[in-house]
Structures are given as C-alpha cells and as structure tokens.
Length: 234
Image (tube, rainbow, N blue to C red; front, side, top):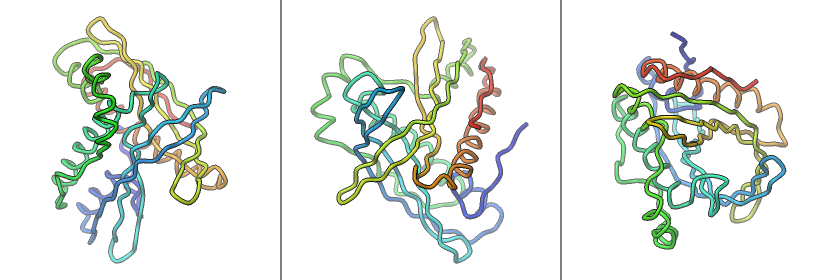
C-alpha cells in the first residue's frame, strides 16, 4: 500500500497528527477565512467563494503555518452552490476535527464556517435541490456493497483572491470526481492544494501536497472497492 510522507514543517492535517505520534511537541490553532475569488476555468471567468482554514502553531518550538481549502461555492452551476458549499466545508472540517482529536489534540467542536446571510438567501435553493454528497458519502455507499465508479480529472485553475486591502494571484490544484453510483452520475470537487502564481518555486511543493492527498484518497477507494484509474498532478 502506498503511503504519503510525513512533512516537517507540516503542510497537512496528516502531517500534524503524524508528527505528534512520532513524539514531537506540537501545538495547533485554527482560524477561518471565506474569500471571494475570481477564477478562470477553460476560458470562462467567474467569481466564487472559497472556504479556508489556516492551521498554525509550533513543532518542537519552530513555527509553522499552512492553510486548507474545504470547499468552493458559486451562485451558478460552475461549482457547488454557495449554500451547499458551506455544508460541504463543515462536513470535511468535522472529519478533520475527528482526526485531530484522535491524534491527541484539543478541538473546539463548535467552531465552523458560517455565512448566515447567504444561508438565509439561498435556503430555497437547498430545499429544492437537497444536500450535495461528498466523497466520503460515496465511499460509504461503496462499503455498503454498492458498485461505485469514479472518473478523475485534475486541473490547474488560475484565480485571484480578494482580501480587504490587497489581491493575491493563486493557482489552485483542483480534482473533479465524476461519480456513478446507484444508477446516477454526480460530480464533486476537491481543492487539493494551491500556490502563488508569481512564485513558481512553490509549485513542486504544492504538487507534492496534492499528490499525497490523492494517495490517501485512493487508499480509501481501494478499501471500498471503488472502480477508478489513478491520476496525479505532474
């Protein structure tokens, strides 16, 4: 079975948990960001919100910081709707909370993403279309004995993040997963990593992080007997 490396300094939740298991003195704090971002996808420009959590602390006294993208939401059909993206982000966040808690970290369980105004505005959309399934849901469907297949498309997506006083050009490494299960086909997306567009030196590390996350995901696919073909960023 393939195993992703444990990076020090850490760039992933897996790294934090792994370093603590190895005996490192490690602290971890989290903070949330919800940013408007201008994306360009196959010559189509659109704006979306990305849901980020920044993890920071120290490993044996040395500071570290990284961020993880939990979801992307749009008011149109180029990605999950904003109202659904909030729920998707919080589901993945709760999974990471469980991993951190099992790894020996204290976690504030009630801390999560919130866009109250948008949730109210888009409530009718959610009521009409129902919840969006995540990769975890499809894995569980396969574990229940159902046949599940996944077509994987990996993309580099240029974007501009909008902060209060500045803009930040990024390239996001996105995974598009076309899932066929129980007679229906759905699409779900994951942001696997990103790097500053003006600093190509960061690209190899970003590709490494994305591929390590894919390795762990593919191991879960294998355990659930999901049909798929492995793909990695190059």
